[in-house]
Length: 355
Image (cartoon, rainbow, N blue to C red; front, side, top):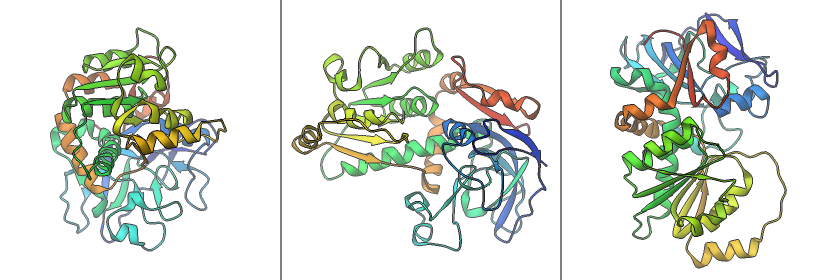
């Protein structure tokens, strides 16, 4: 079968031939339909993140997938059922996080991630997976099923943000997304259409005209150019935000978020920055957090429950939004186009088989 793999750091994914996998007991064989491409894939390709399975030179890419069950292999799944796979797997044996159904909370070294670190991904014509890690998706949503994984990341982030404010009455009226990449835009759409937050803002570094700015404004949100209004100045120019979602990986934004939050607000950090040393007024930020009941939390990955919620969220997103978000779906004969970047590219996917 054909697969798309990379030698981390080589800088270019390649099409390779691999044996079609055989499902073990408790696993199903899935025929891959579409696999999304995101920033993590580009980090793996560049060698900044991730690693192939032990003993392998290359890693099969892809962690945002949708497929159809080819062989249920005695599981509770049905042949022809559309499914989305979760990402994390147990490295050797089991551990308490997986036993509790909380693989997303496992620390480094106690998990592998399909298509990212220690385990091949889903960019192949077929893949196998334990049935417990396959989430059913309605037929009508299958063409966009590769969006379920990124939506699940935001499902977890929002869940944890709300949980951090659960000790008191908290009803966010304003929200700010830092980053106008595909994950930031998906989260913005969730704030606008699913959570029904009154006032939303999205920060980026793009010149007009730009498709992401068009998406932001079509959602009814306000675009903020960080070159004109830094994060720390947003409260003065616009307003402080009850909820801030950081999806840039720009290390300074973690600290600037404290200033941009409204009293009792919470900032959720998802970006993974490179090492960077700079000066901050730690005492002032500490006071700001304490005296105004603010909170910062970090989050990564998601579990099955977040994927199930993400399927429901996907069904609620406006078709006009997803049409604008997905700027290209490419077959294997032109798969390299899915990894290109440019001003007219927002979200892409590789199609292995027709949906």
